[in-house]
Image (cartoon, rainbow over all chains, first blue to last red; front, side, top):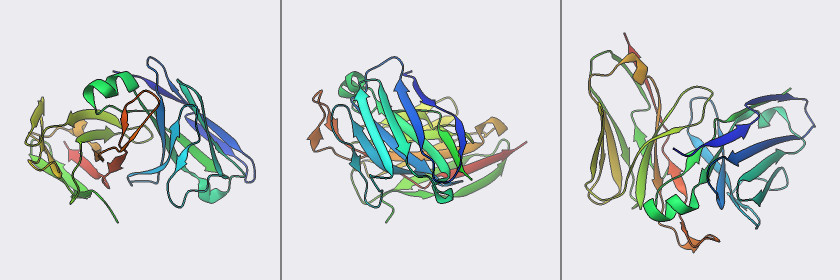
Length: 120
Length: 120
């Protein structure tokens, strides 16, 4: 199956600093990537949809100036948590859509392994 | 409001028992996916069902998509401790926009998840 790599797997940062999380599609091109946030024992909450070459679309209630998304190439999207605070501590997960396979199957989206962010 | 209602939220059973997880909605989905997630990792796709009434089997797991494409179920036969994990259903909405490659965009709506624990 398709591979999506997320880096780093975990990060600890001081309150007020910024953290960048990378999401890469390793063996396919992804015109669309999605960023999710997950709290312990809860489901995934979509934060934003990242489209290659255009601005990301943010879900209601998600601050676009705090969660900066850049999708500069067909294989890389980044999420930067700016001026992080302890309440931003969470598990962040990206997924990438295989545009070629998606068109054929109409269904596929593959997930990265997630990034555990702890703000102290 | 939760677009996809997943039940039960928690399930604790003995090895060898059968179980069913349900995913219900009042909305129609173009497809529905089932994922399994281990702690600290991203979700792993188990199956995608696309056609109303479709049934797919994956060893001891049986997935069914409702005729109206509004609900789905996951049945596990003779559960094993290795089946322990968080099971997530996700329905893909009917997309109305296109990405740069011409693929229709329909976001995934996740259920709340079912935490399954199988005791030896």
